[in-house]
Image 1 (cartoon, rainbow, N blue to C red):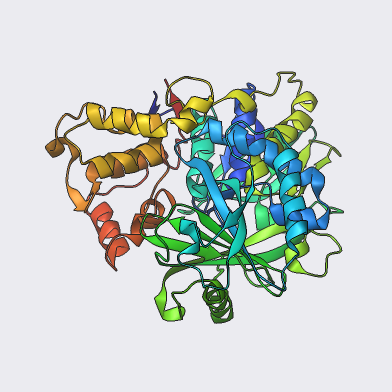
Image 2: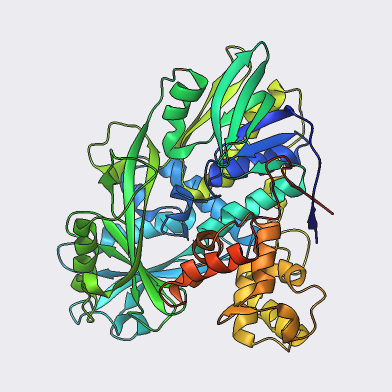
Length: 529
């Protein structure tokens, strides 16, 4: 286990790699590079996972529908990564079975069977069961569906807490020496011989000068804008911005399977059990040309998702049933596809070596982030004289070492046994609360609870199940700075608390003069053991 410690820094900062962007790709690259012994600075203009990386469908999946677009290489790469990721962080990722109801007018059953056979066999599986046909009249998944859906198919993929995945990568990077600056924008970049001179500006106006041997542009939706405006570099590649929106409603079914629905317009939408009491429905695919900082679901998208849900489920929903929604812009690699839903989810890495190296990341999906990061560092490390081998395929993310220091199938299959062990060790805490801690923090639950032996030592209970001890942990170890960070990105507790809870928690933090304990304007933080 590790705790954060302050580390004085002389300015300007000097590093091997400056990573711009604190989404999943930037955090993953920072982690991989730091683990190979490169000195790393990462800056993110807002909070970690503020945008695209916390607005996904929250799935670790190969992408069954991508087979229709003949993206066999992308699907295979993602299928291989599914089980690598599940082993690395079994607390925030777990296997999930998906039910696809079949009806007349949809893709023929033989074609679906063939696609699922291919999906099962494109990559080796140890943790996930294969697909099979399903009689919905005899299965729990058929109960909430309309009577016309009598048969279907079931297959496996995985679930992920996407925002926490980003934070865990940043934590691992910091543990290996990386300096993580949140709420810090890269204002300018200038090549000076074989180095970059960068100006980073925090949201309090404080400027930090950085000299870096290499820059990684992982700015997501801003990748092209950053190249032109900050780095003054032209690129032959571009991204296509596609908005994906989701709605959350009260639970529509009792079982633990998810659904994948085929719409007559050819789109695929998921209905997923979410946060115990809810159902998550999405996503849409809409061309986007607005400001990337302020993305919101439209009424048209809400109506679309409600209508699709009503086509399948007995229980109808309307926009008034939506308890929460979110939208994000996916920076997809530009291709010739006319339909936004057909745009490739693959990625390309563009290395510019006209002076100090500049690597830009175009496209990608959350499932392949680790492989993308590995390939990115494979490209830049030799240029920087670093020959260390890739390492992340066989490493746990923070909290993922439930039973051993290396990834293993047992941690995925025996998660409930880990929870039971926590409940025995910390019997003075409510079992449901410990289960939530186990899912959020894994083995780092012991860090959260270190030195506490009774409920009174958890501090003030700000809301039901949210104690001061947990807030302090998030401030100290996870770069949380506000109620939104805590209630909507480090957790989804905002869904369970009363309306207005965000303002109450912000006032609670302000009354104590609290903000992130990891970082000050002059002292970025690295973890130390």
